[in-house]
Amino acid sequence: MEQRARAAVLTEYGEPLVIRDIEIADLREHEILVRIAGVGICHTDLTAAQGGVPVPTPAVLGHEGAGIVETVGSAVEHLAPGDHVVLSYSACRTCRNCADGHPAYCEQFALRNYSGRRPDGSVTLAADGEPLHGSWFGQSSMATHAVIDAADAVLVASDLPIELLGPLGCGIQTGAGAVLRVLRPRSGSSIVVFGAGAVGMGAVLAAVVAECGQIVVVDPVESRRELALSLGATDAVDAAMSDLAKHLRRLTGGGADHSVDTVSNEAVLQTATTVLRSPGSCATLGLRGQKNPVTLDQSALLMGRTVTGVIEGDADPRQFVPELVELWRAGRFPFDKLVTTFAFDDLDKALEATRSGAVVKPVLTFTTTEG
Image (tube, rainbow, N blue to C red):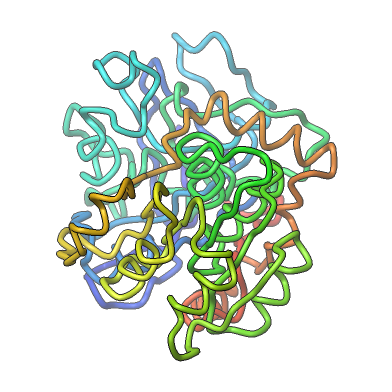
């Protein structure tokens, strides 16, 4: 029986996403079909839609999905229909980096997440009988249904608000993982977070969990600075202020122990490095396209400062997402305060809110009758 769905389809770079009916291919033995309850919109989706990430078109984007398993392939043993799952990036789980506990740096990452196809070259989707590129970050979840490798789905309890959990698999995981998995600040240390979008706010929430003594947020939007303060930041600074680096060094008593750069243009990364004490460490997280050359002061790095690139928080979602969920249950990681929901049919409104920064984390939700 043919499985049909509704999806937001990108026909060409720069064109608007259009909701339309699509067809879903038969499952492979290791795959599952998930009815999507909610999917976050990430700036990486917008970057890809403009051609900054070379996903082939036509394509279905969306990579912060969560939902309910409808069907499982014949070889899937750890999941069953009715299970609630959070979806994350795809990794082979067998290469050296995966085996060493770093699936975010899987040797097949580009093939499995950006190619628009399964690793064997086949596609999971079609539109009017013509191939449609899916498998975006292993899921293409901006749709009522998504085909997922079962290894890339994280089982969660059925009493959780499943429609809100998708961003834990990417944006919030990226910010939180950069702090808890990469920088690993000591209790009482200082950290400056540049950018108060979902990734930056994830870093703020993680810094609170890590018991940082000073958490400074830098963002041009007043409402986001106020939200960061309500979530545990100790200071919030307007990114547009003059002599920003000098002000931040003074505010942190001569320099911060750590910084997180979620913007990743040259000016912000330079400032994120400059504000560090010696020694100090910066994690840079922003994806601005295939190439993003920057110039840094190497003499400053010689004084024990480090800059580390991080994707997906260098976290294994199968371990990290359950940790974040338990922190949320304990009232220590209120990521839901970052989320604004939109009905799937209000896609254009949600995309505009994403582009303008009017909301921190837009999440598209689906009714039970869709698809």
